Length: 378
Image: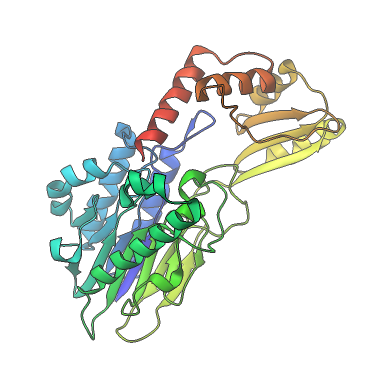
């Protein structure tokens, strides 16, 4: 059995005002070509297919176009919701998705409730994203110390895996697909850090020994995290905060009962993102290098620039999405939120300190929508 393991598409992603959806849609078209070329039997999608719970029309169109392409090839898809996806939306769409040959689990179901399905003779256990607050009662969180609650989350996830493993069959290909954090996994750098901390981590040893392969999403760096467990990584490089050299893309996996999986990474999808750092005195010389870069760029310039210079750079180089000036002896600091400020107030202060002016109405609205989507994802 040959499967394509993919995750973390983030359709609808907007980076510094640029909609990445057309780029991600093009990467999905490349996946369709790969499915045909590599004679893939099934596609496994491990969550975060969308960037926020209420995706736009273009993001949804790309999603359905990919599923329709798979159906035309006779290749089914199975997957789970990630923390960015709308669980209820995927559940409501289940009858439509089934007609397109796709099974996407938005909500957790135990083995007895259909949490393990048959797909081309494979037994597939689905583990959609589960936040700590959904898995552990609020009262227990208040009563326990942080270390105890972390251990409890990992323990409950282990019990969940054991329950689902009851649906596995001896001598069959037993596949688990999940959107979660494995303890010790190396971050890609662009993940939503609230959901990748140790409070949400499970040890790789928690996966059932009956599993032939564990297909994971959530961490954007492609990597192996257990004997048979892998992260596919994000389909494209999503954010400047991601490590530029981190592997990402998808995985072609060959599975046989009773044998270790054979995993072949594939990558090179989407435009590269790069952060250029140099002194203000080097600006003219280094801008030649920036101009030749084929992807999206962020500039961190050491020296006292001004808003007019920033505007000129952005106008002359549309692929440069951000320019930050650092005064000598200063380093860019991550945004921290004083307890007395709301997130909106903190963003306004950040914008004032970074750009010398408050955010305009459109930026305020965009920030509020992003903040609302982040809260809704939980």
